[in-house]
Image (tube, rainbow, N blue to C red; front, side):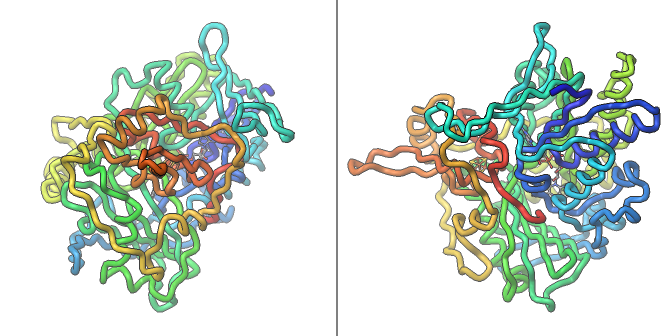
Length: 534
Ligand SMILES: Cc1cc2nc3c(=O)[nH]c(=O)nc-3n(C[C@H](O)[C@H](O)[C@H](O)COP(=O)(O)OP(=O)(O)OC[C@H]3O[C@@H](n4cnc5c(N)ncnc54)[C@H](O)[C@@H]3O)c2cc1C
Ligand code: SF4
């Protein structure tokens, strides 16, 4: 199938790009064909975010978004920033980046569903349930589009009765909008050496639950962030707790993936956090509606790779425009998609000087990321010095310190198990804290079982010889879906069992595996979580 532009991924970046392309073409009185593919069973099915949403890019895309009925129903009215110790919660001054006046507490999944409708109304073709499995190249090595994965191939690699071949979507320009740690983006970064001049990208894992709470516990518009307990002071991370409409509360926990202790279990840290005396009462008497997890970029400004490759551009969190100090990336994702659309349209009309990187660096995205660039790296010195440095960088240097701190890839930070302290986590109480399997159940994750593995070990022997022997198989703990299990045979010989159907597509294993031995590739389209409104 031939298009002018193919977009891989129907998140805020991909949808904003598709909409802007159609808007600009209409303004110029030209025709442009735009196709968006999405691996989730529907748009929004794989979207997981906080989310406090800064509407700046949306205002630019649709100045009349209110009249059009965009699902931004709860203005953020009350910001709180807490330092937790095991028993107490101390309210700290809210850092300026975390002031949310003018922002909205939303479900990003629902915003994407709404954006998809607007896009379709403008003539964008959206195909949900189709995963971009392979980039297509012409003889000169230029990207000429993307192929979706075949359906109905069995575990043995042979076609089953349900076989349907993949589709080649050919495009003059391909936009990669796969979000954080995109699997095709990873291949192109390597092929075109897009990181040759940038720092390593770094990540966090965010685990989230959506609750319906008791009316007395519900304060629509309240935004709470915390640092400190239950994490130790050397580990970066913290919680978010957002009160939306309809008695809903989004609660989540982020752990920086540069953590050192292989015994750390981000899921258990999150469950433990909810047991804190200042947090637990919000959820007692409530009902957990949904659960999920997703990695997020933390590398910021210094980790932005080259953004264009022959035949296309990288947009949104696939490139890494999240502002860690704000914990927000959907506004920058949308803006990058819009700027990419403007560049692509100029290129398609013959202006080959159109430069996405230059255009984006003169937009508001650049100064915003530049100012925040040293805050996250400062936490390598631990919580106290990290907070002190963040205050210095914000209030004294105002983000303009004459240096830029660097960081290194997360998988390099793991200590050996022999040098680390095992962590004893409390048992779930079944009221506010739960186990992993019952949690995955409410992510509505579903994969065809008879398909080739989508979690691929480059060297299967390393699972035991390296991961088990040296790190006590940290994938057993960092995977928020319990996909990786060490099982022992009768003679006590360990083996790594991969329960791939449980995977919620967070991409943490692809990031944190100490020898980068795990490759996450797309499973059959439509597989994965089915988040309602995350
Ligand atoms: C726990 C957490 C909390 C957050 N909180 C906030 C917040 O409060 N405010 C905020 O602004 N931001 C927040 N963010 C960040 C925000 O969610 C991201 O910045 C934003 O979603 C990035 O948009 P995107 O379109 O680039 O990628 P995504 O939203 O990740 O969308 C990518 C889409 O592409 C699809 N896709 C991926 N690969 C393929 C493929 N090969 N083929 C087909 N489809 C594919 C995915 O299924 C997905 O639908 C948070 C993130 C997390 C994880
Ligand atoms: S298998 Fe990997 S991508 Fe899937 S849920 Fe586990 S850590 Fe995330």
